[in-house]
Amino acid sequence: MAPGPFSALLSPPPAALSFLLLLWVGASRGQPCPGRCICQNVAPTLTMLCAKTGLLFVPPAIDRRVVELRLTDNFIAAVRRRDFANMTSLVHLTLSRNTIGQVAAGAFADLRALRALHLDSNRLAEVRGDQLRGLGNLRHLILGNNQIRRVESAAFDAFLSTVEDLDLSYNNLEALPWEAVGQMVNLNTLTLDHNLIDHIAEGTFVQLHKLVRLDMTSNRLHKLPPDGLFLRSQGPGPKPPTPLTVSFGGNPLHCNCELLWLRRLTREDDLETCATPEHLTDRYFWSIPEEEFLCEPPLITRQAGGRALVVEGQAVSLRCRAVGDPEPVVHWVAPDGRLLGNSSRTRVRGDGTLDVTITTLRDSGTFTCIASNAAGEATAPVEVCVVPLPLMAPPPAAPPPLTEPGSSDIATPGRPGANESAAERRLVAAELTSSSVLIRWPAQRPVPGIRMYQVQYNSSADDSLVYR
Image (cartoon, rainbow, N blue to C red):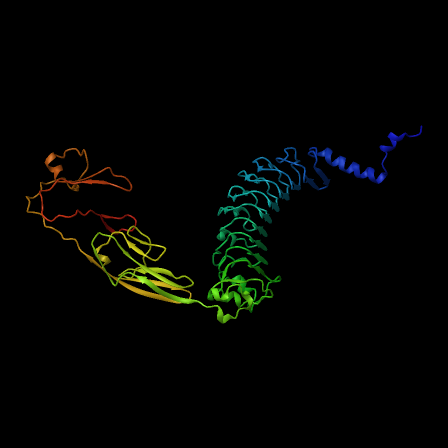
């Protein structure tokens, strides 16, 4: 019987028949391929491609044996806790160009074999420590083009020793957990361009011997701290197999002596420019002679008068302001030579003013203001004279009655056995909390000239004697 038109459609050539059988066998052994997705099962690798399919969430019918999963260009808004559960063979996961704004805690915890995670071009606002838990084999983490403002210090702990490529470009980051970044000993590429970073911790890159590309373009950096990694790449010792490329154009660089170390490195490009000081504005960084990278030593412009007089127990503020390039840091030294910091009695403000909230007789003497920067230091002495409070001798009184050994002369309300006349002569501490106490004492016969009462106690923070 001659085949009709319909039977001819079901008779493909032998080569095409084998290809169709391969796809059919692969699908029959596992879960069916999600609608509008492409599944390729070429043993031993199962690949699933679900790009531009209009997905609103991760399909629940994904074969758990999948090795490569691409869910790009969809409308997935969140990654749920069980979306990738039991996918222990997954090596490559791409979630780029979705609308992901939330990632549940432990969402990737089962992905022990994952080597590459692409979450770029989404709407993430932060990276928490519990979101990337379990990714102990991760090599490539791509988080560029999100809205990330904060990265928790523990966010990268699971893969500090394995990650090779970290991309956080085009976000809203003002800072990074630099201590964690400094432990990524296998890092090859660190991409941080187009953020709001204004500071890099000194020594961050010392241990990153495999780093070959650092991109800090278009941030808010005024300077780059000297780092052994940069110096080692052009030092007299053995050179790394791949030269280090550092990009930092588009930053408001302040070209003073603190960047002289960077100017002395050999570079082929000349795209970076200086923002300040004024006489170097818009000049190409690599074309400026070394002798023009200058700093100005500190100059103290405002300080407290030569002598400050204060009554014991009262507060005193000592002003000290300085100018210089770079901006000087102000420290204070007490009369006994101690470097002062913030404590229960003293506080150093950001403008250099020293506040002593409660003065004691030990504060009498010369306080020294020290302003320092990379070009030197300046000092200014301030004399403080603490006037002791007068002590009035009480009138003679009869010897107190014998009391039990170890009893206190401070009465507390409701103490059993305390008679009224004795309680009236005692100091009473009531309403005691961890930070306050109400103190009462009996009325005394009028004594001419009394202006104040003084309460003395010890601070548990630093064992200093405090007066109120």
